[in-house]
Length: 450
Image (cartoon, rainbow, N blue to C red; front, side, top):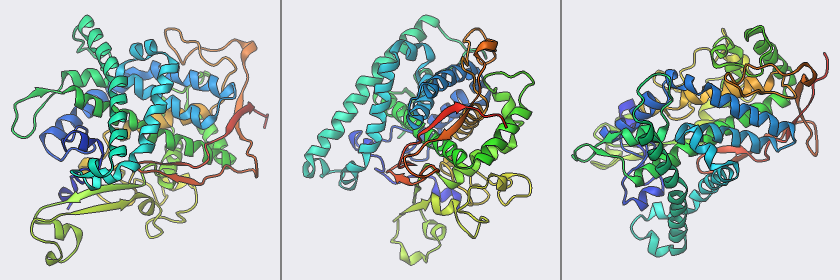
């Protein structure tokens, strides 16, 4: 009955109230031509593997900034989140636009995005009462309007800059230039409700950009959880280090390259186990409507009024840690995803089975699933791998340059909590994401000879 679970509840996102219930992003749009156009654009134009390979230099530069921040003593959790945000922001607007923006303004934009996500639960009453909510709760309505204005003030000038650069550069349909998300949206034609094809409006651009940047937090949360688990399990960290060293090229390059990740199944198993054990999205909502709603829900037809639907809440954590589906589900055991393990070949899209849900399921699965896995494996591999004192020379081939012999120095992850010798894995469950209650405080120390 997968076709019965293609829509999300109407008004599930407060921004739809501001848009008079018009769904201006992929997450909330009902299944149909408009949703398909948005999703196809993201999957085929932006996130296709052939396009993502063009971002190798960008990822290497962000990795270099992250390593320097960690080595200087910057908070690990905050640094990991900002690094992922940098990659996604550059995918969205372009590296040149983000570089011109400057790090202080980019950090302010990231902080606002986090504050916006934290504030969304307080607008639940506006979703519950879409018509009268702004009169019953005027202060929250004004707060929502103010947040939306800040989004417009942050994003639209960057969109204008992308437009200007796009006009100046002309069309580039070759396979050597990365097309940013905003560029793809400016070229996109959509239609809905019988309208003829039209361009994406500024209001839609703001909502789509907010959705795209907001997805950063899920990837960043998993990266932080993964490093926390590896700090708590040094034997697994050392095994990942050995696997990465054995599978990468013979030269001791600074950055493990994307092409090498496919030769590291154990690394992927570690990331998958982190996703299973610490799913960043606590639940997935679906709205079931139509004649087969009762059948899809497994209830007697008379239990649902004619034409009525129902909202279904898939509890992702319970699914991923179901003792009936997993051996010792509470443990962190990456080997379960290796050949012969109980997680071997698990269906991440949930089209064949519902054992492990990550970011949606079926046709509504997140189009960025493969991209998120790439970024996670890339970051984990390079953070676990030996790091250098002067790690990156950003020349023509960033990520491949060797440091001077005098600058060679290896590092490892080590945790120095205030109490105990383990990272606290307590959860903070927000409206959209589950993150670490106490941010990771691991740091880099000189690697000891073993």
